[in-house]
Image (cartoon, rainbow, N blue to C red):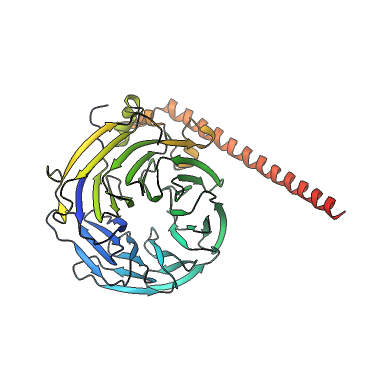
Length: 436
């Protein structure tokens, strides 16, 4: 393996919840971490060593979702008690209560501008709220079963929701209409989120799979079968090239979306891993589990080194962390010898790491997973972007490839329209035959 590249490492370990940790989120200032739990508490962990954690008590039942506002000045929490609370993440722990749902609230999220909140509930609705006035604005009501998750798109114009009715719906926030539904036949979707560039979504399923959908073409892009149990949560790396997942099989998995393959399997939780989230710049990620543990990990891999890694390693790495004193202090400083034992082994086979890249695209789908303004290079080419930038010849070639992909996309769209017309005419003929 190339020099300078390190595996993800467990940096901190917190214990304070008295039941399963259900949700986790970093403050953008990287000084705090928020968690929710089945113990009905919200906890704010101070990442600075020796600082005490805050335990916020107010919810009357399990807290199922937490998130910091983009400014970091508020924490929203959603609970089985049918309320949302907005907390000030300080020692006082002051909060206000938002009420409108008539069932368990499973998900809460701020819009990227911090002005709105979106919630998902067992009352089969998605609700949008104003943060400044702390008032309910409107409901989205087409799901016919519990709604487990709802998220804003990065630009705030769309909302994605996942329900036990086995659908994922995309909503237009301005018109309040459902503009597309994806149908999941394999199982329910526990968690869904937008890619950082807003062009696709990822879904974590009870059928043990992770799927990525293009919301412009409404097509399945990638389908990963890397877990052996229900997938509970996922989080995109801010650069959009990686996805981390948490599963009932007790593992976290880091997926490379450009290569369409598994990079790392992380063992640390004793029991189901229930939640996971990258920090705002992706240098850390945090996870929680049914073992009541909160773990903070250092990402360690970066874009420049990653291209070299692909040349030298073709198999995913497995990293095991065994917490020796899980009943010890509420936090453990980084690199304390007693805090964990590390075992690293190279995975010998791909029997549990199957992934499918739809259409078996060897070229990297820059028109899908990358920003339209900046085509993504294959990982092996990343080192060309250092210094003075991409060589003009390579940039020209990439522009030509992107242009050809756009033409191909338009052609496929036209063919789909023609096929739809043909199907409609055929259906008309069949109906006329049956009537006669």
